[in-house]
Length: 337
Image 1 (cartoon, rainbow, N blue to C red):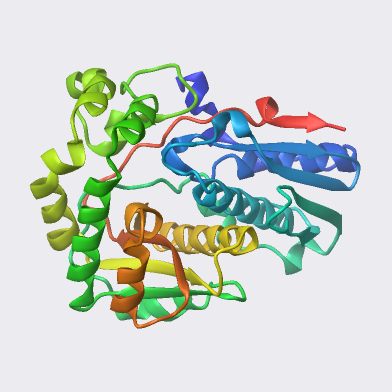
Image 2 (cartoon, rainbow, N blue to C red):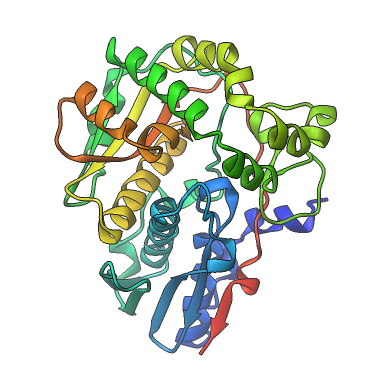
C-alpha cells in the first residue's frame, strides 16, 4: 500500500476527464506538474485554473530564503513543473501558449486550446511518473548515441552541454568546493528542516534514503546537519561519487540570468531528465557550483562559454534503483477560479 505522501506518483492517465469541463481537464494536468523536481523538494508552486487559462505561480511559503535568496532555484523549479504540464497537455490533445514573467512579475500564464492528440503525444510523457533524482553510483559507460538527442532538447536561448572528458574532474572539484562553501550556519539551519526520516508522513522535504542514508542516520540527519558542515565531513565520499561513479555531467546554460532564463533553463533540464529516464538513465542535480557565490564563473571557464550556467547535473546509467521523494497532492496546490 502506498503512503499518502507518495500517492501522487500513482497517477493514472486513463482517469483524464475527457467528458468533463475544459477546466477539469486543465486541473488534471496539475497531477503531472507536481511530479517535477525542486530545490530541497520544497515544491514551491501553486496553480490557479480557470476555464481555458492557468496561472503557475510561486508559493512563497515554501521559498528558501537562506539558500536561494535571489529565487533562482525557485523559478528553475517552476520551469520543471511547467515542462511537465506542457508535455501532459500535448498528450491529452491540448495546446498551450506560455507568457513568461518579467523580473518584476512572478506568474507564468498559460492559455489553452484543443489540438489533435495524435500529433502532440511525446515519449517523455510516460517518463514523468518514473523520473526521480538518483544520487547513487552510475556505471562508467555513457554511449555516444545518447548525446545528439539530449543536446537537441534545449529550448531557444538555452543550451545543454554533456561533459564526459577530463573537464568533468574540474566540475566535480568545483561542485565539492561550492558545496562546502554553501554550508553557512543559516544554510544548514534551513536545510535541516527539509531532510526528513526515511519513514515520514511529511509531503515536503527529502527523505534520507534519497541521499543514500540508512534509517538510523536519517532519524538524526536534520540534527546533525544543523551542527556540522556535512559537506566537509563527507568530502571524500562525495569526491569518489563524482569522480569515479559519474560518467558525465550535464550543464544547462542560458543567454542571461533573468526569471525568464531561469524558467526556460528549468524546462530544458526537465526535458533532459525525462529523456534520460526514457532511455533507462538517471540524473541528479548539483546546484552548488551554479548557485553559490561566483563559482559559476569557474564553470564558465571550464566550458569555455559566456552563457550563464544555471543547472548542473549528473547523468548516467544507475547501478541500482532509487526511491521517489514525497509529494503534495495536486488538489492541495490547485485553486479553481
